[in-house]
Image 1 (cartoon, one colour):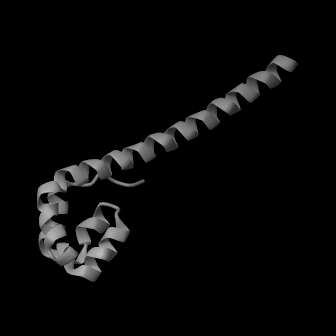
Image 2: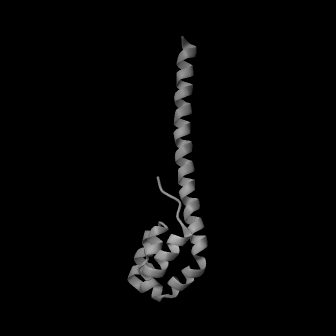
Image 3: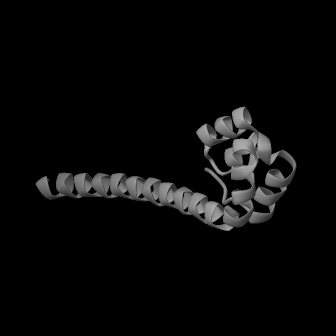
Length: 94
């Protein structure tokens, strides 16, 4: 199960390894990480923009993580309820 991303950790990765895309990997954006790695943080422009947009990026990543968790929980719950309905139908037929 994925864990919530931390703003402080994202900024540390951005500061020390940002031009290589480490913070993009942390925020579950592997293609952007590769792009940053190949272009030195989009020739440092993208790296600087990330300084001001990091909070939104972390929030978006966390929203996506929780959406996935909610979907998995709901799928599991639906399967449980389907099993219960099937069990009740069998009991009613007796």
